[in-house]
Length: 113
Image 1: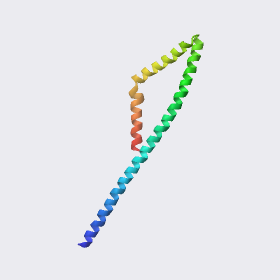
Image 2: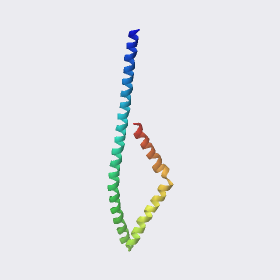
Image 3: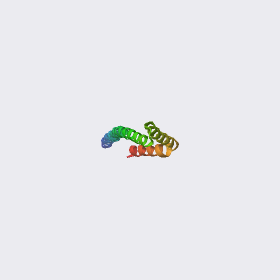
Image 4: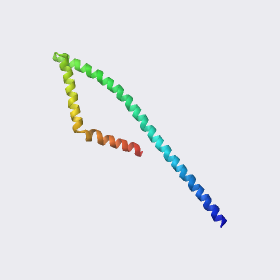
């Protein structure tokens, strides 16, 4: 009888240790995934900032160039602005296909890795 009690006590102790180890492993995996997501977010933010400044300068140069070709500088800025209004309208119309679905799939795949 005493052997069974010792056996079950040892078994219970090992099960408790296994449970704690499993919880610790889950926590470490969650921290790993969150750190990857956070580092990717910082990286994407930095790239987005530099891309924004590059595109701003490029758009100004393009507007001045188009304005110079058309004879009036402000017309070049209107042409570039009209292009962006058209781009915004297309993004609004096709937001689900272009933005929502691919972004959702990317986020889900990152969490499930």
